Image (cartoon, rainbow, N blue to C red; front, top):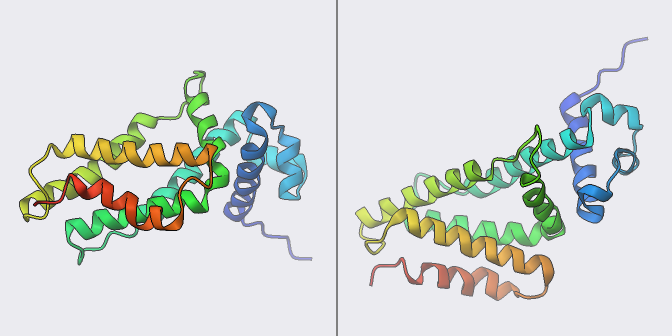
Length: 199
């Protein structure tokens, strides 16, 4: 009988998706590895084969979701786009991603909280924000050079854009019905670019 070949990456992804659902529902402190195993429809021992502790699973999940989120957002940039088009695409897809991932809102807050907890595993939020600021500020600098954007401090403008997007996401965690489709697709991007567009 031929041995069963296990796709370890696919199995790991199954665990991450189950863990995201359980952590979002029960929070970090209320979640047990058994809960994740039940959600993933596998034995607890299998989960422990991939992650030695709840901390390791939690921080691994953060890396997984961050990669998924950034891939979704920054994949919209193409060489043919003007800086304004590229930045508009980033803002729009980010707001839509918040819609799609709204169930994970409290999970993100848990990531923020556990980042402050200390210990051997850390979430480097500063590095994540730096990466986003670098990409957005480069697009703003390009837009200034090409006459699309007003002369602004691109790093400060990038921080402001990220701050607005973070603020929208945080408000939607507590009130999912706060913004309608029109707000997300039209009004919020228009407000973000009001100060950037060259008059």
